[in-house]
Image 1: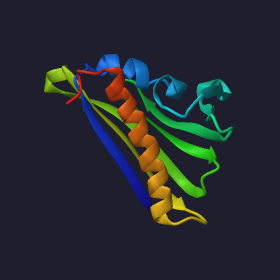
Image 2: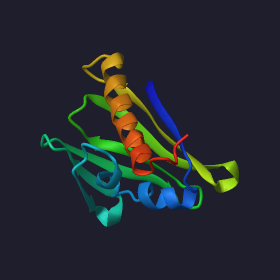
Image 3: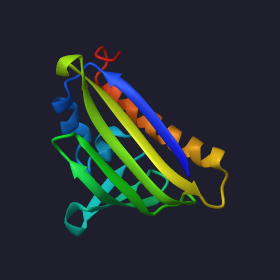
Length: 141
């Protein structure tokens, strides 16, 4: 299994940050190159679209609003991987004045190298978390 993890610390309370990143359908609100999200199956499946016309279908596996974390799997993707499970978590820092956001995943590359798969997910997660930093400019650490 391969894995990827990107973490960022932001001087924004976790409850405020979770309002943005905690919605399973909210990726277009904060992740560049995710242009649209359509929820299905009672909000447990999301169909994501990028500007190039690619579609990703992901299933919500676990959601814990109190712990500010959720995990999802990929059902369909243009990236050649299997057994993908990703987690987004927001944890408090500085007694709740700041937050650590961690986006991580494990997966098996299929038909592409581990290095190629790692680069794809590292790029996606980094772009999303950098966009959070930009959104809260002046509050990042």
